[in-house]
Length: 161
Ligand code: DLZ
Image (cartoon, rainbow, N blue to C red; front, side):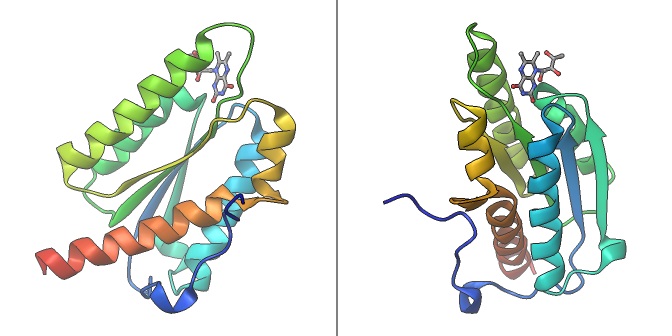
């Protein structure tokens, strides 16, 4: 019953040609975040984005995704920003604090900048669950984040002209 994160109806995805994307990547659990980044970037390219219009910046951990995205948003150069990270449930409450902070932080950026800032963050219980969603049996959350970025950027352009 689980949705495959890499499956979408290509007919419903607008062209990404001419759109500019910022991607902020957390360096925590790079095995996962690099796979998510690759999925996101390849999906943007597949739908017509140019290599030169995809700008990547790294941040140390998922907690820092919000500020990383804000610094890119301040440049007013992007049609959408994708935040990529993975927070794995541990034995302490760290997981809850980080997930709550980055979820709320990214939500606030959407509103503050009137800009699609996409939550490409996995929050699994185990490393295997993360691998399953970073190009494994459940697809790649990076693909899903890229499709969401394209759709939201196109919606904004359509409604705002
Ligand atoms: C400290 C920490 C822990 C325990 N776990 C994760 C994690 O699973 N995923 C992640 O992206 N970052 C983690 N971090 C680092 C925090 O996001 C942050 O970088 C530090 O708390 C410094 O602010």
